[in-house]
Length: 465
Image 1 (spheres, one colour):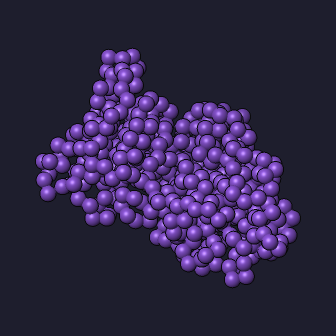
Image 2: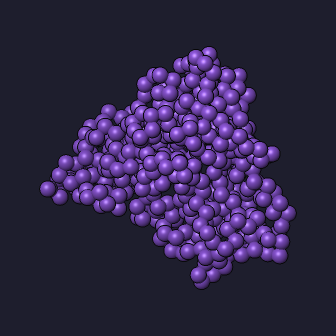
Image 3: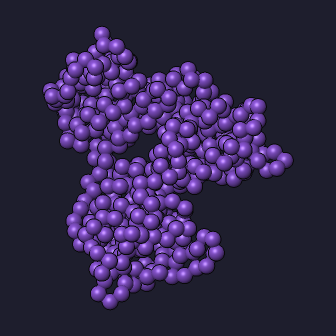
């Protein structure tokens, strides 16, 4: 516990949510009122995990360039940040955590008055034969990025460099691009029929076609059965039910799961996706002294009304701000999300927000869908590039339910128009009247999102009730 007259805040996890909470709490309360101790098992803190594929691909330098605030900077603000220190157990009734020094193995107990769980997420690693072989990498932390780059450096001397990416979600697609830039022959093995399962299949097909055009081999509808290794225990191929794909390096891009092992063992409440459940203040339900944020929690989807696990740095930083305010005696809430995300594969931009068709069906919504082709600029202006926009709207009410965009330069960030409209509960007809910025270098007279909204209005009227 803290010294007489001050509270002790313990934070598990030193990345976005955890250190944002620490920083915000320190802004509101000085070290004489609040002692802050943060435990991080890795070598880095406050970094952009989203930047790892671009570091691996050589677009940005790393790892230091991906660090927003160094451990020294945190310590200068009287935050006791302890790297290479892993929390291995929670004693909620006793108000303490068990910690282990990763280097020495020494263990001890640390008391707290208030606790923040910001343990993040872990790459999905199915229990396949060979999954832990040398040369098989998940990509979630800067330490993971460094390990992958070490493997790539070791392989660089070979005449033919081959990489297999397992999974075609955001990380899978981004890592496929990164490895292509590194000069590898890249094969992506995907369980689904199209890459980017966060999109509807018809929009995912556009991503598939673009990947094919880049020379990335995408194998759809296939299940990996095992990782094959050579004499030295290093990966040599990835096997499916009917084929083997030679590999000098394997990257797992099958998504992530909430890292809630400690929380589960301690009996904290978990949701359908295995993430911690909190109230609007990010306080763990049923525990007055415990908060949680970042990739280890589930949050309210404002469109469907259900809890979802959406691991993004944008959310994690906001969670941390809310937690830091509340643990320091202030006030903040996190109302929920609409599921906005953007990505790219080389020059193709990919964006989505709100619900897919199957999401809307799962919650019992009746809807119409429309898809339009437009351009990023006025058609006569140099550099105008094609863009496909798909929109979902609720039947009868016309309420916007979701939007997906695939196109070239200038496409992805247009999804923010739809994200704001979803948050505000706008109808597609209201979107058509938005006073958006226009000039030929930036947009057609009718922005592509509004073109889709106009078509959706017509579809709603035709569908009737």
